[in-house]
Amino acid sequence: MLKFGFRIKDTREIVGQIPRLLVGGVKSFVGTIPVGNTGGANVPPLRPMEIPEDLQAILKPYRYN
Image (cartoon, rainbow, N blue to C red; front, side, top):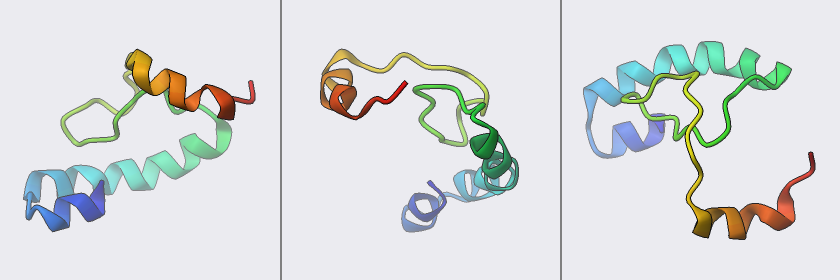
């Protein structure tokens, strides 16, 4: 998302990604990132989000829990 922010020249997205990168790495390592979160700066980092059914069908073969 940081790269996307640079690509679209969105300062809010770029600035919003900095804390996500700093904290998200640790949270990802311990497995506490919420499922379905898009990772955009306009979404709270700990908010779980529904994964659309069409994407669930694509991801289903790769689930390991």
